[in-house]
Length: 328
Image (cartoon, rainbow, N blue to C red; front, side, top):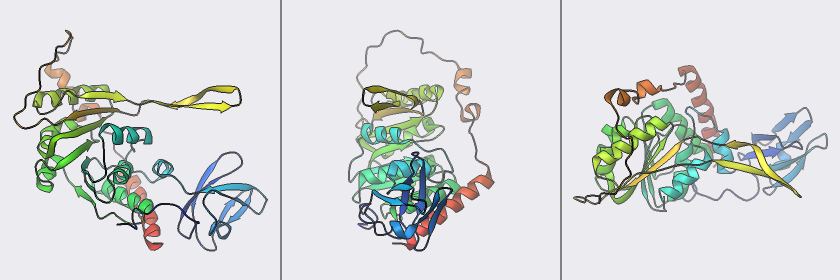
């Protein structure tokens, strides 16, 4: 386990992924090979010049063009790795770790593995003493996620399991009731699994849902309230805007990472506990049956990747995982 969670530092060696930054700030990621080369219209950069150099070194191509060589951070990796499904952006992953209070040694259930981006962040947070139980409906997504995790860590962690199947059916059979510290749902219809998650969570445990649309947000909140098993759900979204800072020229960037999804959290009540009734302002919260039908997965529309594209992505992720495993 210590090899899997080893610190990504020290001199570059064969098999390392290296991020090269050129004079215009353009990024290129290469995997180091003895005798290999990075070819550009600005000359050739030999891999042998990089191997053995410390991280964050400056190397020069045959045309005397300088490149900054650094190991990619986890943020860099998840933004460029092969994808079968859309990833959870680093800004949301950071909020998930914080809002759900993912701690070392925690037993975390993750539903909706996708391409494995959130799995990597969760594995980092729980450490070698924690347990991550992931569930994914689609076999091809599961394969891509496992290959991506192996490519970054060098091997599949012993404390991570990926179960292919429906969460409602697989969760009760996979974990003991009341044994899970945190549940993170990233799926189209999380309201279908609320009661199963409540059964798995320990009292005081956190349920966190990553939700894409406002209509889904509303339905998940009502589903959580209707069970009577959780505290009042709390909702938020995170937007990140960079700033240009150069001397006295200080201004916000023209572009930002705005809405990607909503986060909703609630905590599991103790058995037989009843949440004290909160005073509310009068609101137009009533809805009709046809409104509920408009929130079903079919009505919302589930964007599917073609089988051909998924097979190609799985091959790319598998090649990266095999390369990482062979160099350990």
